[in-house]
Length: 257
Image (cartoon, rainbow, N blue to C red; front, side, top):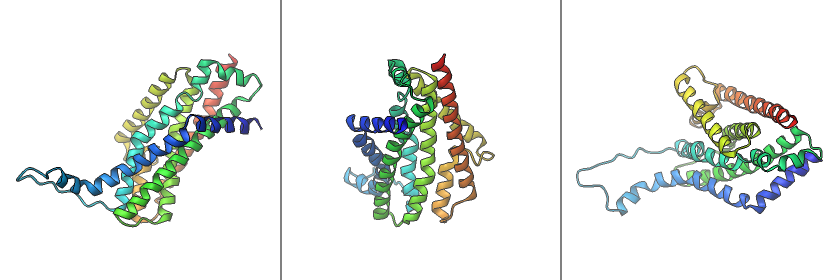
């Protein structure tokens, strides 16, 4: 009962602050921006006067799989930043303002408090992400060629795990620190560290969470799910669960102290 109450309160708050409007719109823009720009780039160049005399630019042909991956590339950069910005004060902000203490003295179990707020934010993020990717799929099919609906569903499921991990990392630091600014810096720093580790050891860390995109590309090109994608998904889900449990333990100790 307490879990559902907090979850519904969070969902209602997202309606009141228009998150259910602007977050999906942002994800739609991110999803369709690159595919549409890539398709109409030659026309845009011609309309602005073309290239200087003697200059030539060869624009590679984009296949449907690459076009859809453009959307995931935008999500990997700007979508991740949106998630961090809307999540960094999820718990840290309430701890700083004292709202968390008022809720927890009712009493509300620490695990209930954290998991319900995490689930509500995840609902907002994944719903927006799915809407955005459906918009991308529509334009990719329209402009570049057909991508099967089953391939889209697989892409949504597998890449959504990356957003789950990013949100969980942010919630973890939100439980650790009271300042949303510190949460922001810590989360971005962690993701940059993960990116650097993967770039250096990608030949060894084939199941590292950062490899999700490359495995999804292979899936879209071959039409079958590679074993490495299943392994990476397992590691990503496991890492998210561990972080969530550790966040609960740390948060409980800090609040009790």
